[in-house]
Image 1 (tube, rainbow, N blue to C red):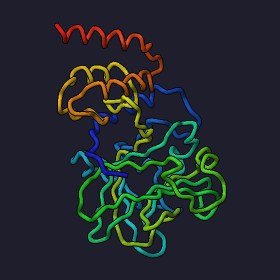
Image 2 (image 1 turned 60 degrees about the vertical axis):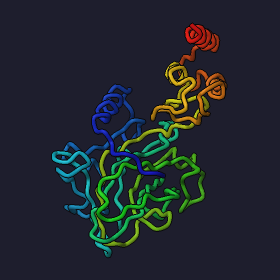
Image 3 (image 1 turned 90 degrees about the horizontal axis):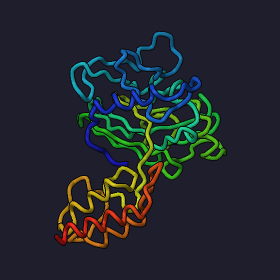
Length: 292
C-alpha cells in the first residue's frame, strides 16, 4: 500500500453524484463510489463502544485536507479502559456485500495528530459486531503514520491477497459478502481490534472504489484500452520520453514494441469495444499521414 498525493475534493462531488443516480439499495448496503466526507457535521455513524454521550469519535469542523471549513472525523484513544484502543467502527453504510458491489479498495485521507505515538493503520471487516465473533479479515500491510506528518492520501486494498484472516474459519468470499462491521484501527499486527495506545487520528474522504488492475496496452492507466491509449501512442511515436500520464513500460524510442500490447489489449475494460479492424485502420491512416 503506497501513499498518494492529496485528494482533490472537487472529484468527490462527481462520485457523490454518481452514487445519487444509482438505483435505491437496501439499508446497510455498501455501494461502489460511496463517500464519507463528514461535511454534514456528524460522524456519519462512525462510533466506538456503546457509552451514551461518548464524544469519541467526533466531527471536527475545520482542519481537514482542504483546510478551513473542511470537516473530518477525529478519534482519540486513551490507552486503557473504554476508548483505550485505537479503533472505531461503522455498522451502517459500510456494512453489506462487498463482492456484489465490486468494492476492492478503500481510499482515505488520514493524519496522525498524536504528540509522539506512531500509528500502523489498517482496515478490518467482520461478519459480526463483536471482535471475537464470526469471521474477521484485516489489512495484511498497514499504513505507517508518523506524528506530525500532515494529511496523507492512502489506499487500503481489500482483495483477498491483501487481507489476513484474524478470526473465524469461513472463506474470504463468504465473509465479504455479508459484512456487518467495518473498522479503522491501528495495530502492529493484523487484528480485528486496535492496540491500547494513547494517540489521535483524523480521517476524511473515505471512498469505496475498485483497484485498477494493470491491463496490457493501457498507457493512460484508466483500466481500459481504447482511443485514448491509441492517441498516446501516436502522439509519442518515436519519442525517447513519454508524458507523465503514460503508465505502461515503453522502449526508447516508442515504436512497435508498444504497438503489440495495444493490439493485444484493445477493447479491454470498455462496455462496447471497437473492433480491432478500426484500430488497424486508424494506424494505417496515421502511418500514411506521417510519411507525407
